[in-house]
Image 1 (spheres, one colour):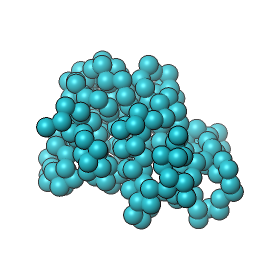
Image 2: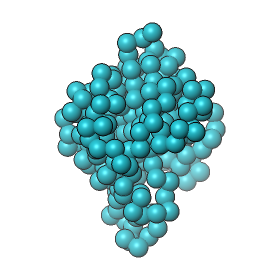
Image 3: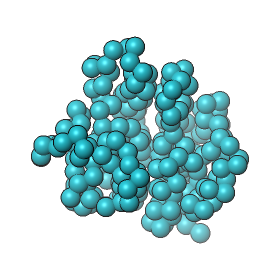
Length: 227
């Protein structure tokens, strides 16, 4: 069995279930944190080991114990919208506790799944907008991560789809616009499986350290885009 180990927080999410087998194929033992034991079979099928730990209630010490000895932590959890209090509890409060826990456990590598406009949306949305609590939670969590000593990578996909991975992407700026080309609204989408591919690449290659990578499905190989 490999000694290399990755912890996925939010292990039953669509991206997490796609990333786990890719990380396993890259030589990592994957442990996926889940809230509901009934999700264990799905996690096993994704070639990961389920760890039942509710990140909404787990404190830093409990999270650090789960992370101890890992090579990387991936935060791919989310409240799913609809409830502003729970959005803040998961997407900011729990997220920042996992960052503190990674530091406490001595796990330097941390990958955050965010979204392409997380840096700017709170400046353009009214606080009463239904999307504002999510935008603020993700923005503030990303900013907290940038202020830590972790070797972080923040991934900012566009509107997520269920399309198969192309393995090719196009980079975007913090406003969600193409860096080298103009993109239509219909082109600002990202396959969840492409997100899983990028997660695996940045961990396996130790790429994009201390960088924010906003991206959509495109025509440049991930290895070339992130070179």
